[in-house]
Image: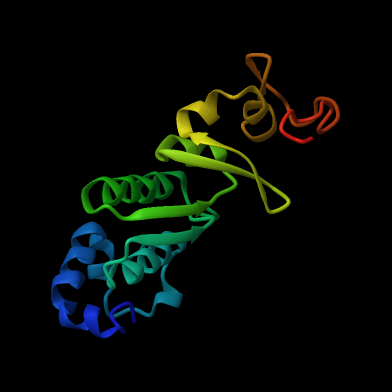
Length: 159
């Protein structure tokens, strides 16, 4: 499916071998329908399908949702490696801010569809508002979800 465009069809075997090298489990399951695979294998299949067309950018919506932590780490590690070695950019929409910032070079904070803050992942991870509202850390300690009201102090970026 990912090699539908003519340019990708010309290098089908080469790209398929590349995907199988990244995700050996997909090679083991090549005769299986994607809908019957586990969640992690389905995510690998989706990324592999996208890689078949040799893209410059891949958009992923919640790639960690519903997956075991070990599989999530494996997928994010592969994405980072693809970014560094192949130059493929990944645009992630991810609720797990810790994970997204750990593997990203740059991040954007969206509020109601507006970019309200952006910067390097390291800078965002150290921002006090980001820590409190997205990472669950305030005043240097982890906050309990049950502690106090949500949004008890106004985000500085909202004007």
